[in-house]
Length: 129
Image (tube, rainbow, N blue to C red; front, top):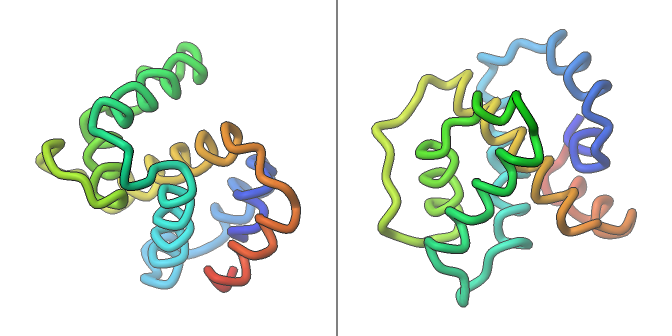
């Protein structure tokens, strides 16, 4: 499942995810683990909150008209938290919105990094999905 997401096979991922119980804690934990690993691949100790704000803005632009559905405050706060940065906060969102936001951000990070199959296989193995 996570392998499909990391390989940017988004249609298969969405179809498979729809058949799962997205309230199952394992589903949320799997997405969260993949999200944190992707963030660590994209942002490092030299990254700043400005880097995160810029990344979210570029992601929204790349999504086109649908990009306005991506809450920039939530996206920035999730990325900052996973990267261990402070200074970006958001009041939060429900579990479904948070998981969907993480999926979009994972896709954007993976697309930007152009991960090789070996990298994806390693990440899938670490996530367990």
